[in-house]
View (cartoon, rainbow, N blue to C red):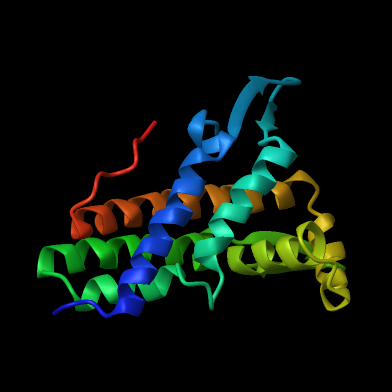
Length: 193
């Protein structure tokens, strides 16, 4: 099935956004969140987590937002739909798997952040943690999100960890989808680290 002009532009937009994700210093340098366990007091293990640097991370988030946000030409799920309609079953299966991984990064209950609130625990999905960080702290200071910001900030570094881990997962899926788009269009894939 031939692509419409709009569909072809969506694929091109995804390629441009993926290029920005790939060129983000965090991805380009292969940085990751590191976790280190060392013996602590007798019977204990101390866990140390090294998060990504704030400014380079924000740059990565800007690139990922081009694919994550509804309404953008490179919106992840729209690009998946274009590829699904216009490709053979093996490509459709690959796209379905990448879509599942993208959705899991945002919605998997196993990745939720536990927030203790006056004797109860509230589980916050990664998508809600990310959107609260983006719209309540990083790129906007939406007054309606400030209560959620305060709740999430009670988790300390786990809040930033959850946001960063989610964005790294999304960035990986953007690059995976770009590989499919490149193959579909007969173009060169972006270099991997």
